[in-house]
Length: 217
Image 1 (cartoon, rainbow, N blue to C red):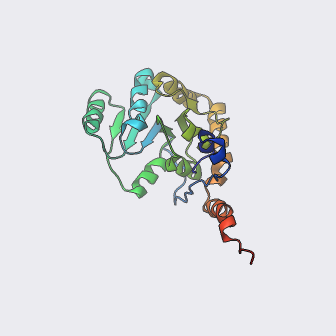
Image 2 (cartoon, one colour):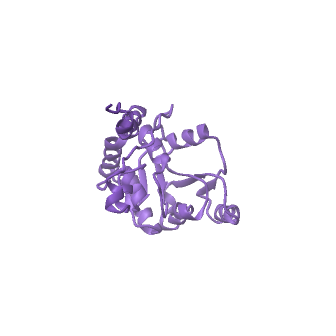
Image 3 (cartoon, helix red, strand yellow):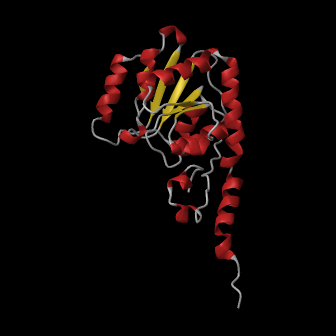
């Protein structure tokens, strides 16, 4: 399974047979956000289970002088999502939807953003969180098992599912509270090693070890 909380969702007899293997990331970029303002990245294809416009909705609870902008990347895979993204851009000048981009461009935007928001209703284990951890971009995430399993139960950057006001409060706190921003970075750095390519290889070998042992004759 792809994150720490996933086995807890299984029956005990199955849980004993599971192993967690975090997907690794090795992005060729590092965190270099612009010196002014606060850019929030939302990365992932637009579909209902991602609650894709929660960060855009949070802008209504943020004052214009805060200098926050939301940049969203991902294809509109569900009918109507393109129209909704276009409507958001028309009424909210601080929101931009760039549509489908290459993986390299998505990583570049992630590195050039102050924050990543993962607002999903459900997650199996978002690889973009692994990429953010390896790059060094702090994450604000909905408190759902798939996100908690990636970031850890004590991570300080969770907001209640679907709560745009709470998300806005965390964004403002990141903007104005240097101590909180430092806590986010340190908590993410503590998870960074889990998503290293070497850690993934080692976890896979541990999971497969019973199958690789020579059978007694």
